[in-house]
Image 1 (cartoon, rainbow, N blue to C red):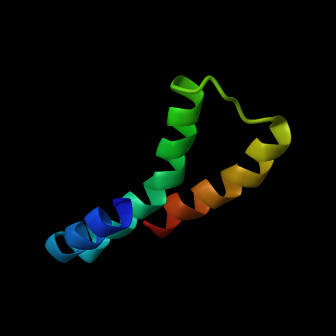
Image 2: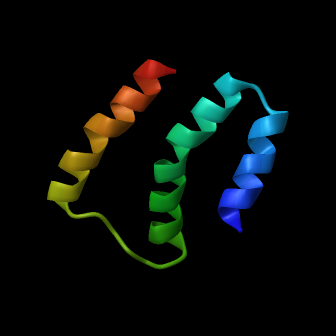
Length: 60
């Protein structure tokens, strides 16, 4: 279902908007995991995740 909805949305939004939303998916997933599920990232996980997020921001 999510893949189908994303495919429909991709036809209706600009490529730049799609790229920004795709780079935000991991950020949103991390926040949902923290707020809704009460999970937290360990220090090592943060060290591994932060470079990816910095690259995503720099690319946009």
